[in-house]
Length: 203
Image (cartoon, rainbow, N blue to C red):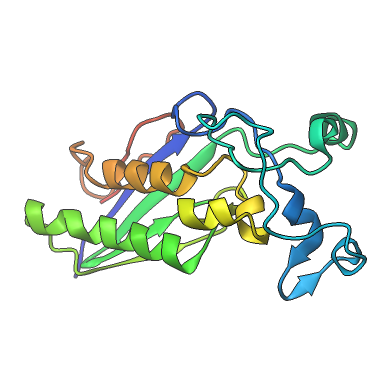
């Protein structure tokens, strides 16, 4: 026998000052990834690593150069495209194993840092959690999740990190906070699933 607990929280525009309010694709995203370059890349129109001052240095999206420049928002409106307005985050503890489910495709380093942070808090609290892992593409899809260093390089993955250079750090801190939620579980056998910015438990 083992205990199961589920912690839930969500982020949205305006809830974290280090996240951009609206998603933006960088110009390098139009060139495709290393395993599938687009015709724009092959023709030399789009190259990875392009950075600039379209956004001021203090803006979360700096130094990204938007694909299509100032026309990006119009093109997204015209094609009815948008990023998720809510980013659901789940922590599932299965006995000594912790799984963090998030709506992104994390890079190896971003995922490692999140896993390390989720397991690091256990030593100080006396938790029985022994290992942590990340599961992406869960609940929604918010593009890539890369470190600030990877974001600044503005390769395909950084250009496809929609909410800015601090996105991975914000998500990491949010997951740690959700996992450490002090809420008491309901009576055994009762599951609670609600939307909102709160952590809920199932036991």
